[in-house]
Image 1 (cartoon, rainbow, N blue to C red):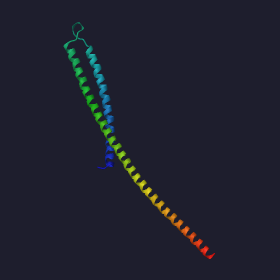
Image 2 (image 1 turned 60 degrees about the vertical axis):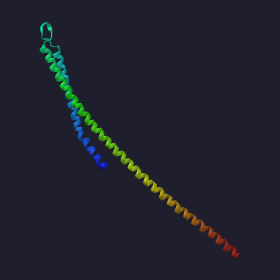
Image 3 (image 1 turned 180 degrees about the vertical axis):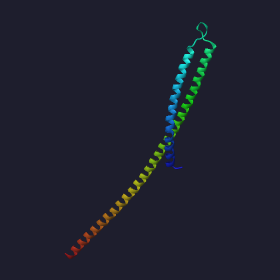
Length: 158
């Protein structure tokens, strides 16, 4: 699987998890509100004293324990929801990590290409300089030989 495919799949999964994250957060908020209601009802149950002389009866304690059991069940649901949220965020982070890894690899590949192009341009510049230097030397040799031949010609004539 090439990097573009991984990047695309990461993007698709991330886009798919966005609604789940919002729904999960909303569900978590609802569960927390329900737990708060259960806690308030437990406190009311805890304060009930229907026994003789204002004492708590066995029924009062059992009712309080039932409310506590409901609160524990709600806490377990909240923990499951938090675990699911953590899994979603972990998945998002791993895909973001893959995305950044892909971007870094692409940038490295581009840098290698640019370095290669720069080396080729440097070679071209060196070749052009060598051609120019060869032309300069040829011109200098031609000028000096023309000067020497001209001097010899005028010396012989004169």
